[in-house]
Length: 236
Image (cartoon, rainbow, N blue to C red; front, top):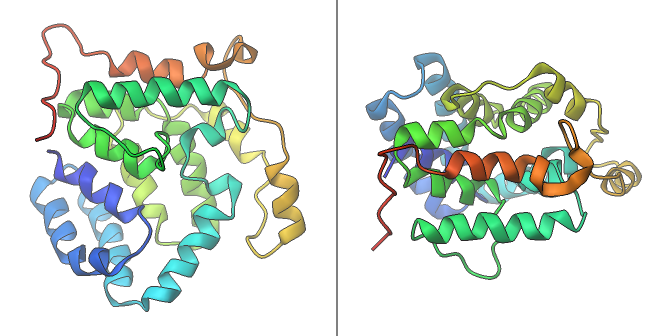
């Protein structure tokens, strides 16, 4: 299992006592793997230090305000592509099937497009395949990273790390399209309600055709093993 992807998944999970206790181990894994440049590892260490030493309730409140209440920072990938459209349901089914092919079975309470879960899946893939797959939603990571930068949030480092690991880099026009969408403050309830009512956004030619031309189609293409590349072994 790729420890760097596993560690990044943990950092984007809801803060818990277990995560606080594992902070040192996660940082050590980043340094041992050396998949990320040293400056990024130092930025990630700052977040790890905050998680390890901060008050748990404060950390949880910050997480909810950032990722649960703010649509523009949602950790559900298809939220940034399909919104609440009916295409999202089929996209979820397709992605869940990809997980199961790799031996990753999730509970009915978990949504397949939740980024920490997606990174758990990538952690069981061969490194080259994982980095190729990670490139498909890279524009989403770039937009979220920029919004977190404006908020002076240490979580920005996680999304910068994902971009650094991705084989394909985000396209400026796709990043700009996401950044043009509303990005209200988490304490502005009226603005938050308005943002959640906005229409879903798709990218590329024929985007109106739903998931075939959206993010799910590109993710599915990247998930197909390259010639002569073995499929990941199911988890025990």
